[in-house]
Image: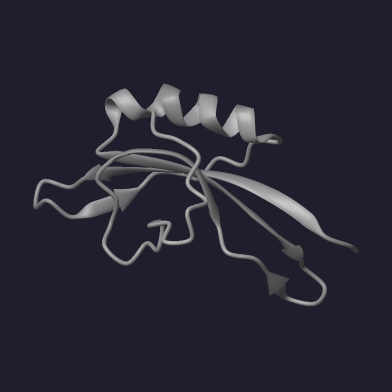
Length: 91
């Protein structure tokens, strides 16, 4: 298998104690579908992020995630800050 790109949307809620709980991840087929899914989930979530990862699954060689859209609070350590400037936009 060659290089592939996966798109993922993660939404989070808060528990009664204020901890993050992740909803079931979505795996849209395109970047635009990921952005639309994130926008649809954002109003009812504590936070949401849509991102892509490109790489070769057979070799285990993956590029850094590219954040397509994000809104709200994300769990610490999720690693979705984008110091490389690959962030494409907010919801």
